[in-house]
Structures are given as C-alpha cells and as structure tokens.
Image (cartoon, rainbow, N blue to C red; front, side):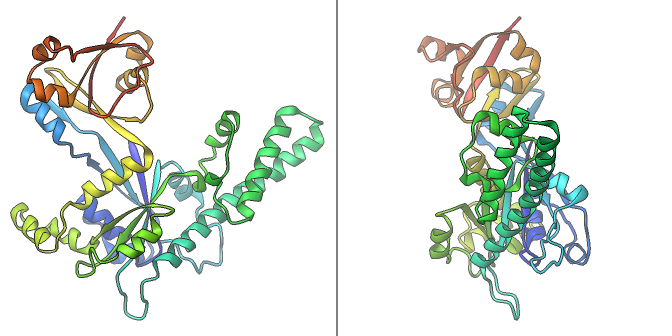
Length: 354
C-alpha cells in the first residue's frame, strides 16, 4: 500500500487537510495541544475505469487501489532539541513512500502566511535529521575501519556516508547527489528523509483559492504543488453530495481534495494503474512506471511471478472502443507479452503461470 506522510509546521492545517482528504473527524484543537501519535486513514483511489469494468463484468467484488495518509504532529521550528524526529514517530515517518508538505497559505491573526519561509524551515529539519544519522554512522564506521584494518566494504561505506555528510552539511538534500546501484542498496535501509519524494500542499481559504498562481509558479521550480482549500473541503464532507457539488461550483473548485492528492501522489512517485478481471473480483493495482509484466505478476501474487509463462494483455481504451474481449481479439488488439514487457497505465492483464 502507498503511504503518504503529511508534515508541516503548527497551524499549517495539516489535520484539516487530513480530514478533508480522508473524510475523518480527527480532533484539530487537541491535536495541536500535545498529541504525539499520528492520525492514520486509508482512502480508495477513485478510478472511473474500474467502475466501468465492474459494470461490464459484474463481479462479486470491486477493489480499488488504496493510499494510506498519515498525519504527523506539527514540527516546531523553534524547538531547542534539533532531533525532532525520534523514537516511534521517526520509525513511522521514515517508512512512508512520499512526504506531502502542508504549507499555510491563509491568514492567521498576528501571523501572515510565509509559504517559502515555511518550506525552508521544513527542509532544514529534514536536513538536521539526516545529518544526525550520517554523523553517527561516519563515527561508527571510522572506529571500525581503524580497529579492523583496511576492510574494503567498510572503506566503501565510510566513503559513502562521508559524501552524504558533506552534502547535508552544505544544506543540500541527498537527492541532489548521484549514487551507484551499490550505494543505493546501502542507503535504502536508512530511509533518509531528504531522499524521499516530496510535494507541496498549499492550504488556502476558499476566498483565496485559485489566486496564488505566481507563488505556485515559483514553488513549481522545485516541487510539484497542489492547492487545496482545506477547511472548506473538510466542511463539504458534512453535506449531501448534491449540496457539496453546488458549493464547489460556486467557488470554482473543479476537483475534490482526495482526487487532487491522489493524482499528485501518483505523479510524484511515478505510479500507474493496471487492472485484473474475473467473476470474483475486478481490481486495480498500482505499479511504478517502467516496471514489467513480471513485476505486475509479483504485485498480484508471488506465485504468479515464480511460475510466469506469459501475460495476456489489452488496454482499457481498446476494450471500451471494441466493447468485448471477443471483438478485441478479432481486431488484433489482444496481445501476448513476455516477462520484459513494460506495463502501461490502463493495461488489463491476465497472467498465465505454472
């Protein structure tokens, strides 16, 4: 399952965004006053293609892909203790696939919005967190190298973590560096925050929605960005669907918060969807762009990957155009693929296996 962590400074409206996206009713005021555990909720990835396929095949179950959103406690930029990510919270935040940086774009009495400064503050905290890990690792490896002689593996690791330490010390994120496959394998287990994909959630009020293009243009040089009227969309969940759509139209909000975040999450992580069909279920699956039919088989079940023979494939668009699998085959749009076939968004796949 995809995990997206929502992080931000106090009063950025993180929990409001969380509620708006997930339909949860997490307590906002209590959350700021000392809560230490994150809020978690899972949402379905709305996909009209899956709805259409379910209508045609009439399965027992229709299963959407899902995303888990995790709402972390506010990060205090004036904390005396620099290692703000520690213990249980650190272990959770490092396991997310991407970070959504919730940035305040609405006015708070006595505190005007400073989006670019807030982003810089968050980046600094990520840098400090990773720097502390690198510093400790360099120290440990240095002692091992001194005591154990010139061990080639220890020497390589020490060189790698020194490179990371130097980068972070210059206030640069680790994602600005290039790593070999060997180095990536070593770093993977540390789940460094400055290596994680990130995107911006600009949280504005409904009156200011759609009026921040210059700011978005500046921020988009570095991040993908989505603008959400968090409080307004949170309140929409309390209304009937028809009434909610009427209010969205009035404020020129053409797409719900959950759909916006789904799209930017997929774009940031480079994800696509493929589908499997059957009488029991019609299901959407998530895969990274560039992954193969063998990877798709493993996503469905490891046994399918082990016994892979071939993938029978056709596209959603072709199926909708032809109207049936029989018509697809007659038109030559039903394909047989091997392990190395690169799966495309919207592929409908059946894995043949031993």
